[in-house]
Length: 379
Ligand SMILES: *[C@@H]1O[C@H](CO)[C@@H](O)[C@H](O)[C@H]1NC(C)=O
Ligand SMILES: [Zn+2]
Image (tube, rainbow, N blue to C red; front, side, top):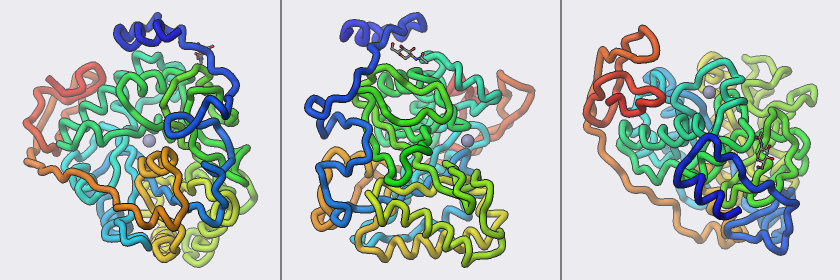
């Protein structure tokens, strides 16, 4: 079976689909730092009260001159109680993305992750995507993002598939091929209280498959950060905040604050699985009271001495070496290599997939045509 995997890595043939079927997870064989069974158990058997409560704030889709204002207002210059800068993760897709602003976010210490080149409809495109297509959408996007935003290739570690539509093994296969570390696409509604902790795909996952198909092959070393669903006011599960059906009145900041805190407490007062605030920026832009409630909530988190707003990759780092809070707060803050942006405004750029002429704000030399899947650098 190892040979098949090596063969696939080298040749990336579409026909090469004989991944080994994942077997039931064996806690004896599957151990940190590189392997973890899917489970609601706190790593290393820590007590909940000794476990850092991670808070993952993530935004999806392209970064532009409109939504950057919200990011600056809500996220910049925040500190956790351990005096480390607060984190957030951006799942960025390519079309209409402003790469100069991605460079800014990276240099503010936030994490940039991948959300595909095309973000195309219909949703079945993702459901049926082959490993080859996933490699073009995410593997090539890793190269594209590093190039146009001028940020380190290795800093790009995370993937979220558009519409949270998994494609079985295929995206995970592409991730393993391109050195991507974790996926944050897969919702769980069955493991919310207590919540499911991140785990690897070496062995069979026990996570409920909400948006099929889910992976069943063994894909060693790739991590899943389950999107532990919220509950709306009726108890209906929702994986993104902006998809919760029954919510407080949009103008009621206090009710929204309570709504967020109630969902947070399901984690904080239980097994402390990472708490996700997964949202699209437009929801905050059109609902200023929701934005103010979020700011209040983040102020609360930043003042708790056992809760930490971090980049998603930092959760994986902690998973690999799970230390209790008192030790965690002694650890050095995350570091990153700052990069410059030699800004270029490029356009009009003809596109090879539609009739649109595009403009691009980038930190590199201008491409010849508008970059797209199968020509991700626009050469
Ligand atoms: C994933 O891989 C396993 C093992 O090769 C296979 O049985 C399963 O059908 C694959 N899943 C999909 C959706 O292709
Ligand atoms: Zn999206």
